[in-house]
Length: 565
Image (cartoon, rainbow, N blue to C red; front, side, top):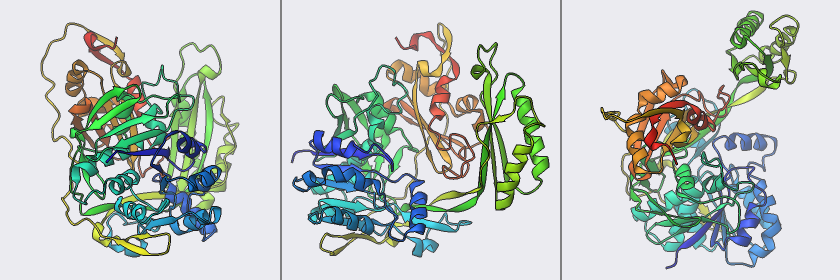
């Protein structure tokens, strides 16, 4: 059987509006997949559902589908999306209204609010939403039933591709290696143009004004080729694919409700311009549990940005914080005053001499966080450090969200497909499990005593690429190099203690590390650096998107012989 050609057209709720049309027209895909659900998205959809009980799905998908709906309906292609969010049935109804002849199926059962007592991780949280991550077999059953569009709730991101490939190739539930290969292919394309050059540390020299969304051709054995639209911006290289492969991973084993993939087995090969082969992936049975994403309503929050100019940045920060704490007393749970930028040496313009104080107030008392905090900031305008000004006045207090993740037994999740004619198909949980361990290295490597001829001080990015991301309150950073000489250096140089030295924020935090030799890569996970996670983190870069770029800018000492030519 020929490979299935899967094209991605969305990596998050709010992605490029024309991408579905572009990929439908240009990708010659059998199945088009769209991922709309980031960790924070369920919280957004919950707010929409509070205002309108018929809402709770990603309405953007309808806008993306509308321009091509008639042409799509007359084709043989399929679309699979998790845009159903909290209300897959509502989106299916809206699609049928848009084009009554389309056969639309839904995949649901991820809502486990009524079974939350069976999940861990829900302690000290009054959740608005609790959704288990479903695998791809419901999608496979829906496509098998003849559905042209499959609308899912909270399926795992890569399951969109896993389900499509399993349907196409008629895989069995225990075809572990094939399923693992599809899982890796799905992970590579789930974030749209990130695998074609977006957010890539080696971006200089690439045409990225409007990078193509990606395409995965998945073979019957699970091996795949990642490519893009011809003559479109972006690139598919070993580097861009490695960057996405390392994005938001943990240890050696990459878990999904259907299969676990061994990341150390994955092999990449540049087959042609903008075509990278992905092969060798080894799979094993999935864990008996699956992830549950829970969102709820947290404390009140207010914030303001204040300019600092010229000299004495840190003294100004301390003065402002002391003054605000004295004015506000005990009304806040948190007052966070963060200095952004540093003093310039002999600046030639005021902008060059400018930094900012990011001031965040958070607490359970709306009045203290709202009017009292705003008033205290305004009252300091003529009575605090020289040059104080706000980029905008402080506003009203707003509720911030809370995110938690936990685990629930797969047997406690009711995975259901509702076909176009209303028939319900129950999707059984896997019949074979294996207890899951992320697979981090237990010890740092021995740095050895090898002598080098000459050392030079350069930015780390002169010899290494990196990509960072978030999982709840943890951040991961994947580092990789392009040749064996640099890999020999990196694996002994980048120890946990060296990472802590590069990132002072991590000095007292747990840091885990795993080597991926086939990729010449090391992944590190820094636990707790994002606090309570993207919705509630007090950190400026709440999802660690720029963390890797900061680390690549750090100056380090390296052997001259490994500098890139």
